[in-house]
Length: 261
Image 1 (cartoon, helix red, strand yellow):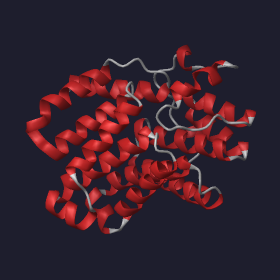
Image 2 (image 1 turned 180 degrees about the horizontal axis):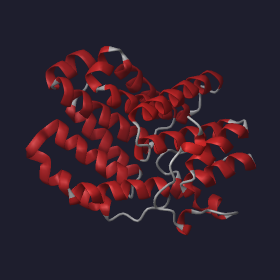
Image 3 (image 1 turned 90 degrees about the vertical axis):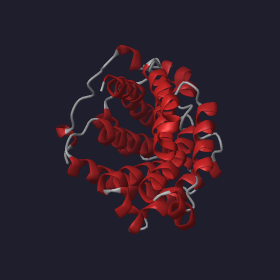
């Protein structure tokens, strides 16, 4: 799919434009979730600037042209956030996730110590799995690949809040789809482990709206009505977050839409 056919980010805001030195100054806050190291190449920096501003197609092009791991990561993140939150065609969404997963596997081979090569791989495969149905994905062995890549990302970078979020969601999704008994015995999915990962994510990145939303979703999937009030509180908190970039804005808007539904 041509990048020129990608839809525009619907909430463009000057606050998400980190020109010049502003990007490095804001970097710790912007990357508190994924712990991406500061890029050394100007081309990769520009790719990340485009990503944070919501110029996702441009970020993919700049990132792939940068020729380094940080640029590749910027391209992968831009593509998967676009596919997850903006692309309307399910077939195109799945194709983008497959492409990102494939590119991440290549980066894993050339740069195995790159935590985000593993995390973005897991994210892309996880979203792809949701698209084809989690049960089908588990049957095809994708669930194990997602779990293994997330565990590898956390092993390489213990402060990777986003990987903790995704691993918590993995436990919750498996339990929700196949039940606690089968999920535990067959796949190693556990309610307490899932909740521990969600709590770890929020401790590492307390102002992350997606951490709050995924925790809320996880509580509903793993515990049902008994934790619904807590889940609703987390969604309300997510909707009140002040987004630092385009991705967080998309998360906040999603939280608001869920509360309004």
